[in-house]
Image (cartoon, rainbow, N blue to C red; front, side, top):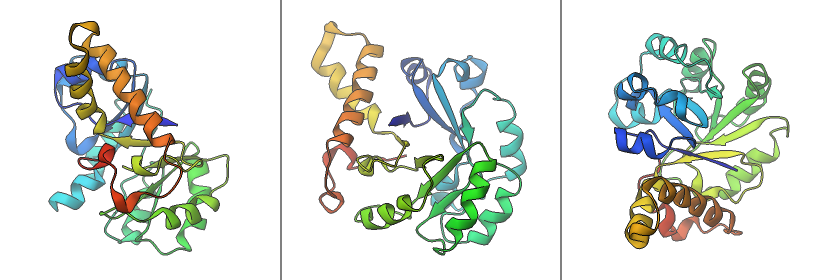
Amino acid sequence: MIAYIGTPCNQLQADLVNGLPVLVSFAAYCPFLDTGGYMGSFDKLLLDSGAFSELNSGVKVDLDAYLDWVQRFPWANAFAGLDDISGDWKRSLRNYERGGFPTFHDTDPPELLADLIPMARERGGWIGIGLMPPRTGRESFLRRTLDQIPSDLHVHGWALGRYAQLPRLDSFDSTHAWREWVKIRQALGPWATSAECMRLAVLKVQRECRSLQVDKSNQTPELFAKGEA
């Protein structure tokens, strides 16, 4: 299981996640990440179109600008196609024709998944799964969907850290590690560097997710109570 940390928003955060898996969103991209050389310092890099930001703000992502931006980072592990989280799956398909791996949403028609699987194979072997917020109480849907996805595809769960116990999820993204870092830094004081505390925060997120063996989504564990990417 790979936990991608959400987009760093300042130089300190970017330095702390040096050598760690990082998701960078086009909608939240900060120029210092590029000019400071940080983009090349991350162990794994996942590029995101910013579809969730589009959903929240109502401001459409410029697809041409996003694809131009993606070309600047050819070493990235994968980049997502511009999907429509609100349910306009036809728009998602039109955007996927331009590139990026596809995402299947709980707002999409169930039969769409069969069409996205061969597309995912053509786009580097990645496929995403996304849920319309709130994301609680959706384990049954996720299990049914994951059971239909062949094992040769890498499955990324968008902000699905609360479901990381599902064995077929290969990676997820979350901003929770930043809050855990603050807690660990305060607890350890001079006994660990800031970067070491960040690595402990990431380990904590990964291990606590894996310890969830039943669907506790309706209880909203503190670990993912707020601020998922």
